[in-house]
Structures are given as C-alpha cells and as structure tokens.
Image (cartoon, rainbow over all chains, first blue to last red; front, side):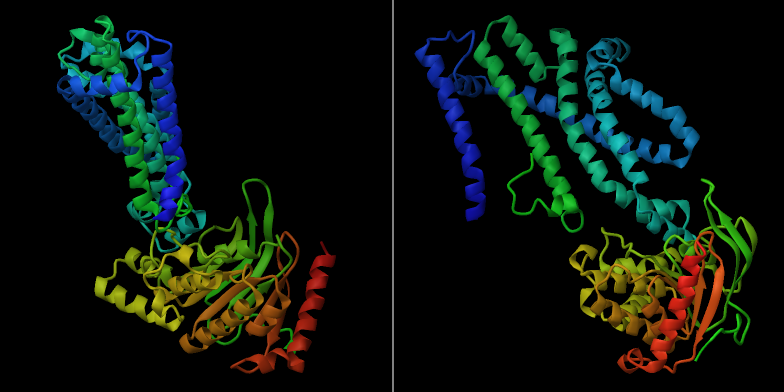
Length: 266
Length: 259
C-alpha cells in the first residue's frame, strides 16, 4: 500500500503542476479562450456539454471496441492460417502488408462510398489499422514455440491440432497480447480518422464529429473537452489491455512477472 | 572390470544402428559409419567430445531424425515407448507441473482419471509431491529436471533417452539425480541411453560406455562396467571406479587426438 503511494505520488504531482502552470499562463497572459482555454474552462465545458459529448464518447468507444474485437479474432485467425503452409503465407501476407502501409485517410473515403452503412464503414476502417499488429505478432508467436517442445510433440505422434493447442497457441499468447495492446490505440485512432473523413454529413456522431463541429463554431473549450475524452479513452484502453495481459500471464511469463511491484511500465 | 564389452548382451537389441550416416542440409556430417546396438535393460552412456554427433545419434534413436545412409531398426511395442529428456528441462512455462507431466498422456488420449492417477504416481516417485500446482519458473533447476524426467516416464516408456540431462546443474544436485536415475533404472527395468561429456558421470551410471570419435562421429570403443548395483558413494571412491574413469579418459584422449 505504502509502496503504491510512493509510486503514484510523483507522477500525480507532475500532472497537477503542469495543469496549474497551464492555468496560470492562460490567466496571467490573458490568452483568449478561442486560442487556448485553461484546464478549468475545459473542465467546465466537459461538465456543460456532457449531454452531447457522452453519447458521442459511447459511439466512438463502441466503434473502437467492435473493430478491436474483430481485429483480435481475425488477426489471430489469419496468423494460424498463415502458419499452415508456406505458400499460404507467401500469397496472403503481402495483402496484409499492403493494407498496413496504405494510409487509412486514403482508403477511408473509398470505404465510405462502397459501404452503405456509415457505422459499418467506420468499424471497417478502424479494423483495418488494428488488424495488422495482432496478426503479425501472433504469427511471430506461433513460430517462436520451443523447438524441443515441438520435438516432444512429434515423439508422441501429436496431430497438427494438438501441436497448435498444446504448444503453439500458448507460446503465441504473450505476443498476441502485446499486439492487442498496440491495436487498442490504433483502433481508436482508426475510428477517429474515419469519423473525420465521414465528416458532418454522416449519420454517425462520434467524438471526432464533436471536434469538427466545435471547430466550425469556434467552441474551442468544447473541442478540448472532446480531446480530453479521446485521450482518456486511449489511456484507459491501454491500461485495460495491459491489465488483461498481466492477469493472463502473471503466473508464467517473464513480462508479467517482472512487473510485480512496479506501478506500470507504460 | 574394464574390458571392451560385446556390442550386444542378452536379448534382441531395442535399437540397432548399422553403418548409419547423418549429413545435415548445410553439409555438416554429424555421423559416419556409426554402429551401435542397445541391449534391453542396459544403461548405455554415449561419451564424446562436444560436437561429435552424440545428440544426433540420440535423435535418430528417438525417431526425431532420419539417417542419410545405413539402417536403423527399432524394436519397440509402440512409437511412444520412447521417453526423451532434453538438455534443458523444456517444460511448458504456461502449465503447472502436473499439466506438464500429463502432456504425453493427454496426447495419447488416456481417460482423465487414469491420467491423474499416473501423474500423481510419477510426481510422488520423483519427490515432486508438493509441487503439482507450481509453475516451472517457481522451481529450481534440479526440480525442473525432475519434472522433465517425470514427463518422459509418464507414458511408461521402454527406452529412455537423455541428452546431457544434468549438464547445467550444480554438482550436488547432479549427484543426487544420478542416484535417482540409477534407482529408476533398477526399479522399472528400463533401457536407458544417455549422452554425456562427463567421464565421471558415465563411469558412475553406465553398464556400458560407448566412446565416440570427433565429428563425423562413430563408435571408437566400448567399455563395459561390471560394477555391482546398487552403486553409491562407496563405488564413487572405489578402486574399480577410478580404473574405469582412467580407461574411459584414455579412450576419450584417443578420440580427441584423432580429430
């Protein structure tokens, strides 16, 4: 308990001091609200605009969550598929790489034209950026299984499925979870970028839409309030996925074991 | 007595390698003209300089690799009648000790109750009774190796192959496990082949020591160890033990000299 406190105190203090300095600069130099509102003003906007912001937050989180779930399932699925044969890997992996290196902003307009349902298009965009880290990491994990353990499986005449279930999938688990942590942030970014591209015309109204809207009406505190919610969601998502990773791996994987007693590694 | 022993003792050999050669894809020739027959019930040590192909010979016997030339016969009731212990414990870090030991039995599709019974029996037999729920990383090196041996024995093999199993353990643990291995061998009528680079370990454990030449490995000579069992601390300081160590060392020097 005491240790948690001493660990948490310095960063909390730094955050408070930064916010105080921000507020002080804004007040003392009379920075206009439409250029940079102070933290207190942003907090007020957050409170006042909550009825509009909250549904948007839920909307963006839902899109992010669905995209991340799809990326986890399909990414891991593709990794398993790629491992089945060299020719499958050689023929499918380039597509995954092409999707990864093409900027989302460039594909998003096309997807929004092709897919009638705007919400589905948003999920698809977020999925496209979140997919690759899971797939690539899981593929690496599946290949990283201990060779002696694989020998052992051969010794007992294990089937392909048994090798996957007993050795390859558990070996890939830490890699998969690492990929998922990266994908979480990417899914959120993907959802926001797609919302931006969809713009105000779309029926959907996520946080990015609120930011656009606030920008048009020069409601800068409100824009910041939406940004705070976005950043907070990103941090929370990362913390959740790190927590999940810790819970799953804490008994056996070095990455989780070493973190014991440390506040957080990131 | 340290006499060159006959290649085959009583009974049909469990594994027989005849003029076996093994060349890897990279061109490395690990074994050439390798002749060896493993008699049932013996405790055979394969001793040789490092990189001489000892481990390759063991992998061939296990059926984990195919010889490039020559013939290899295995007389075993089932493919899983071989247990293999690697140099590292090679445990599944994500599984408890009992799940690790149960692995071969789960792969063979035995009923749950039977698996639990056999695992329990093995764990108790190797002094792991209290560690069934522990994870490998919570165990010492010696305990991990015990788990590895328990796993290799879980499916009740006829032939147990060990690849420098105790090389990374401290001397005290090593001696203790040597005694436990001897004990298992006597109790269960196993045939054991183990690879080692320790003259003293081979002289203490084996009923026959096969010395390999430098790469490409072949059998340079064999030394039968007629010491009575059970062997113990007395044997380790006996005249005969020293004589065998000397004979083995001489052969090993010969192996190194020819490289």
